Image (cartoon, rainbow, N blue to C red; front, side, top):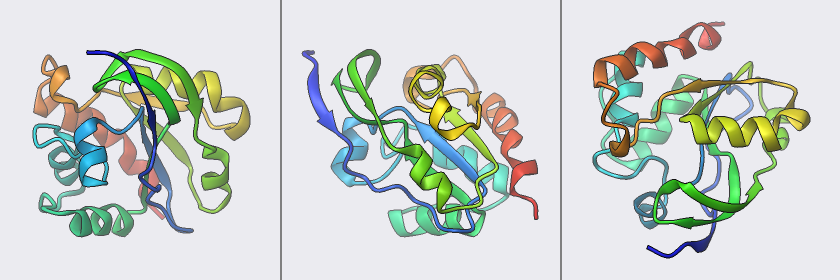
Length: 166
């Protein structure tokens, strides 16, 4: 698969009450197709988040937005654009970061988490100096990361909970 230039077109999900920011790398082709985060049917993000928050798994975009907003979670991606082959993070070239600092200034975000090591590395390299908040890496929920069990993902993602409390 040949790399192609991809522009991030999905707006961040957040409001002034957001306390935790979860960042992916770049929306997958399926996420871009449906216009929302973690859109591949085999991506485990939504079942993991629902288990951590003790909520039903959201079925559509409206329910997904409601779930994260109710629990004060913001969603976005580290990159605004890049060259990428499909959804293969290892193929990323010419990354251009999103202005994460602007999202932080309009919210109460206390912690930044990344879904996967590539998002973590890119955040540390391109965003940390502007945000001043070190990221905490979480395992990717992508179907390509099948080595990490659903139970392990749920356990690791529970790290967000202390930051959501009042």
